Length: 149
Image (cartoon, rainbow, N blue to C red; front, side):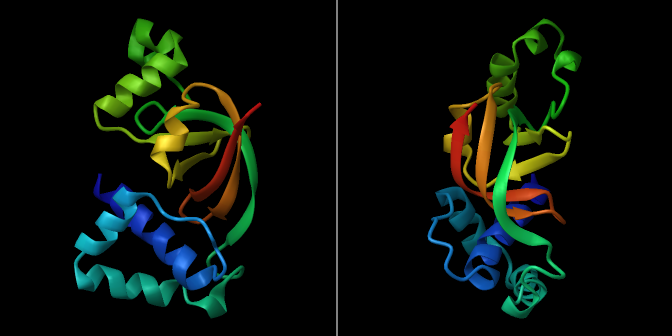
């Protein structure tokens, strides 16, 4: 869970510092996490994503990725959850209730953390197209838009 908070904070900083002009708001949980993070953790992240490094060292770009919404516990494979895993939507919702987060499993098999859990919930277990700022290094997406396929 700590890793998720760091990534959410990183996404907030990416949007604010490295991706000037990002008009999308981060989810409330991200803002709360950023406000409660110790100052020692916040400062290095700001240095790591300075505007001068945009598109180079950070690997952040704006784009669209196709895949399916899953959960961070199961990722690509719900079958390890037994009978519940036969229904990807139900399995994802149950895993999130147990503490997992909604993620995107891209068509190429990569798993990305998502900044907007509320919008992702609507599409659990379904194929989608997600647009936003994509951080390839941390496998995270600051979600701008989501639509079913």
